[in-house]
Image 1 (cartoon, rainbow, N blue to C red):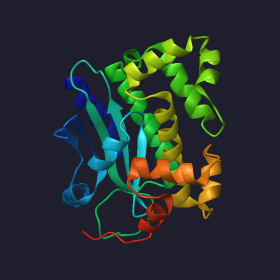
Image 2 (image 1 turned 90 degrees about the vertical axis):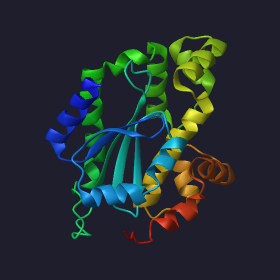
Image 3 (image 1 turned 60 degrees about the vertical axis):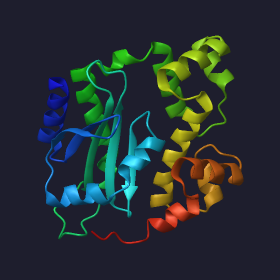
Image 4 (image 1 turned 90 degrees about the horizontal axis):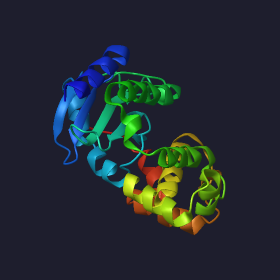
Length: 239
């Protein structure tokens, strides 16, 4: 647990964004940098429910257009499995009456990278997945916009299909298709937030070639259709 404390302390010292760690039952174990406003926003958000639907790789969760959280699962860590959660923080200089830190939207990827670098160094997370699984996840992240299949990854890794499916599911808890769809849906949420595109255009941009399948898959992960999700971002947030 001391290592986890070091991760949170080092991250907060670098960026001054509130951060906490919860176990698999979403009980807060460690926290750093929270004030009354950030605690209230956390309490009134649906973040823990949203994490349950997207619980493998680092994800960005956005509420009401400009309030953000970043979630990094800690899997198979020898001390405690759970989730490191950054936020809330704002990406626009509005709601100035709220004491929530501001970081420009383009910094989100940098924030994720800083957290991952600190965690990898302190917790040795890179050792928790096999090289085959890590390479396959990297491949998916780099090629999710394409029509990739299991056979493509197996050929890339030079692995038997049955063996690949077995180790991927065992180490990640996801089938290849579910993991790929999850990555695509998370990216689509960012596009719905920032670009004025049709639902079909969004679907095509993240690798889906069927409007209905995209909508069905999106609702499976978010309990909302893409249009319902986009409309929900336009509503205000009230504490």
